Length: 453
Image (cartoon, rainbow, N blue to C red; front, side, top):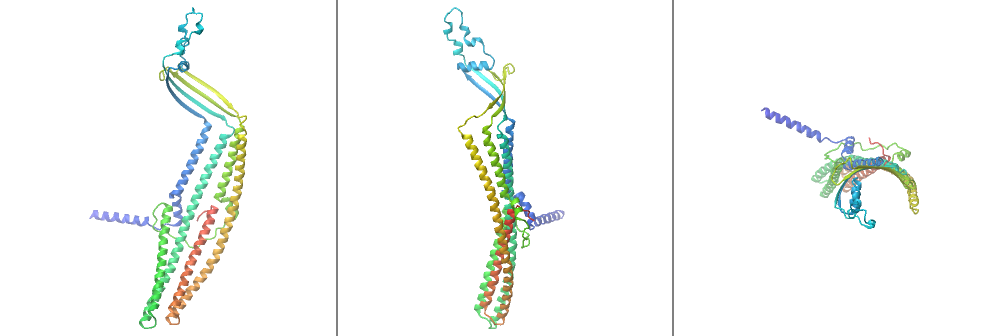
């Protein structure tokens, strides 16, 4: 008995958990989930990390480069063998052929030293540490570092753009769902009226006040409304699939917001200031500015320092301290003439910079034009919605009037069906207009890079 009670209790807990897991998702909660779960946003975040890695790579160049080199060679080449011995500080006079010098031959200078020309094969192990440090690069490295910093900002702006695009899609899906549910509600009310009219027509046929064709007209219209309701329910399922894709998890139901969205109170100047496309274009101008500095670095001298520590022998790491050596130094190079190539590169960079300035101005004017177009479209559709709401109210009243007149045999069933078709048409037109208004307001908010409440 205790085990049975325990199993029942566990089942109740799991059932409660499943119920809580399938609660309808609210829009604000969905937006929070979107920012952490959406795959495109995650990909944009990785792009930012990649940009920071490029920045670290560029900054690391200022610290120079330390290389470890381990060489192994074996040779009987005269130059190599003598060089090996000299590098490992083991060269002797015998390597110059002094073993063949006896002092009696007057042509001794013409005698070829066999030990020098035909040495035995020799191993050569060399361990080397080399450090190179750039001292002055004509501001090239500093300019590249600034470019990489700007690129991280651009990647961050692109991530923000992806976030706002996905929020735009998510909010539009929620409000589309609200309109679909409201339209479905109206159509179900109409379907209920048609079913009532169907029953009334059947009763009137029984007493001879209506014809069978009247019933067929009612049933045909009923099938048409049921088809529209089925289409809207299918569209709701598609919206849930889209929301599931955006949130990267299964979504069974959502809590829809109110259908009406207030016009955002934001000025054109604020939009131009916050717009992400304009911000990216401005950062691109900064990149071009630093690329011009990189081109001008060709006119400056380049200076660097280096140091090297090495040891060498005919066996690996033998007598390291005895055979060690070092080299330190500095180098300055200055390109005096390059056939005008450097000048041409600078002119090209200047042209690219001026082109980017033009693109920034074009972006601002293009966004301003787009904002005015959206505002005008919203004003137009507001008038359309207000008119359609009045037309729908009139269509509802006319249909009720014709339904009553049909019951009194003052009009035909065809007239009633026509008025009902007009009623349905106004519902669909009103839904399309509301969809358009919401989409335009969302587009305005996306352009302004505004908050989504």
